[in-house]
Length: 456
Ligand code: GDP
Ligand code: IMO
Ligand code: MG
Image (tube, rainbow, N blue to C red; front, side, top):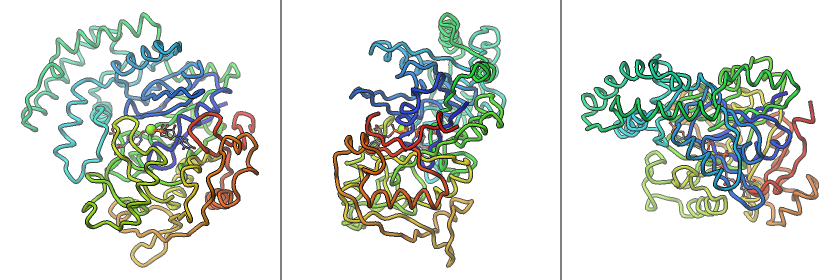
């Protein structure tokens, strides 16, 4: 069977940790979208692994697959594999021949376009994600399979590179270097192709995964980013360029929707909100320069709110895994979660970071929005409308700081009562059972209520 892990908010909900937690029962872990814009953290026995491309199952020695819906930067992939090898692991990573390749000009153009976009910039990770998906949709992309065939690679580059060079130079007025040089790109990427072939890494993803399923294996589908960063269901244009929602798990792997639908879809929820990037955020606390719209810095700020934001940011370590940028933080946004529960069809929830909020007198939740004089319970379809929404808050009594490792060992009933009230409110509102509660970054710091591989 399959278990699909999906971010329900704006990324960094703790997906990597949940993949690792349930990954023991999985034979194969496949990523279905995104690229090295992701930063997934797995903490195993005090050892911290930050993975941007290699699926999180690698830490447990599972077969990792980068599905056809991913965009793959071979340089990052091999760096990450080599680093894991240096740390004593033996990652077994396969890459879909249909996945698209991030080339150096994609990264260059990502930076150039972000600069130009000003207010429309999403604050991307500058990994070339958007430009690579653009070329995929424009049918001028280079796929992993093309790296294995030098003639095809050369032909693709000869068509596309002059266009990209003209875009950078003539439209954006930038000087270009070897990242736009056909011969250089051809030599470098042909070599990557040779290494992929030598290490027998490429697969026909759908067939590979279906064969495992037919053999009775458990497959985990690891989403990157989150529902509100989805290009269709997120806060466009402040989104990524792929589909982190569960529908992406089928088109991004080649497994049929009925196969994925027969399995479980677990929504990963952070107990508050964090956001790296721009765009509105109705439940935001305080603000972050260059990310919060119209942020006027400490002068215009509400001191108590800023203090609370800093407290949560520091307690939760809310600084980007990939970029190190401070993340924006806010209270839980229930309209955002109702939208996510519907768009993904969650069968279970893992709610993380309950420990981060411990010690606060009260914990708030954006229960609904006031939008043009009306109360609404889910996100409106345009981001301009979302920006006009004002959150209506509900207040919960806080819960104390406790020995969370002990709570995890004892189980759900040991979770402080006020935290249980909070968790049960979320579960009731989303009409979805809680499968796990994160009470710390480590694998052992999780209260397991249900293992989706066992509940089927
Ligand atoms: P991902 O992108 O969804 O995999 O999440 P990230 O790894 O980018 O960010 C989540 C961060 O929170 C990581 O540093 C995790 O180790 C950490 N984390 C995950 N779950 C919990 C939790 O329940 N409590 C605390 N305190 N940290 C957690
Ligand atoms: P994980 O998988 C949080 C954000 C960027 C930016 C927007 C588009 O670790 O949860 P992109 O580089 O994808 O074109 O950037 O999306 N973003 C993320 N935010 N977690 C992530 O991944 C993200 N991946 C992209 O900050 O606003
Ligand atoms: Mg992350």
